[in-house]
Length: 202
Image (tube, rainbow, N blue to C red):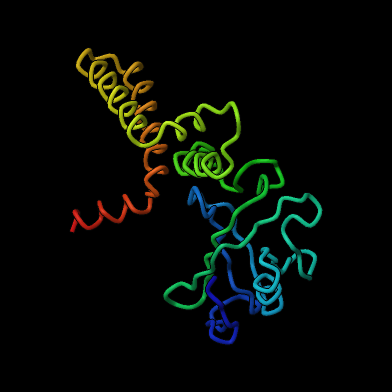
């Protein structure tokens, strides 16, 4: 985790000496909420690894999740180019919003789901729970998983040629899932793929 020093921030541009903090899901990259920190809140957040804000209504520190248990576990913190806003990447333990929704912003809950699925698949690979279809795939190894990817890709192409959009979505989803399993078995992440694609884009 990056260590942020409050004295290095451009607080003169912030109202009441409070720096705005954008919280983003570290897995899905979904924006979860906006809050504010003072020096004490930032120090407590970094020391405990959980997001603590300065509550303007309560006029005191407030650790997100202290009553609900829905903590925001910090993965990293970034400062913006003007040093007057923070971006916190966090792993939420439950809904972020008091309404019980994933985010305080009404973006689709399906946003970033592929990344969530990749995380679940990684968990299956680590724990190898008995009875899990994903576990069975891992036990077969990359060769057999690769065959499954090929089979699903063929079915996907057939539906595309047939012009069947709904079936194409269904089969394409099978391709994505099995490809994520194959990637996990090869120790390849979505970030690795994004990196390769970005190199090609240049």
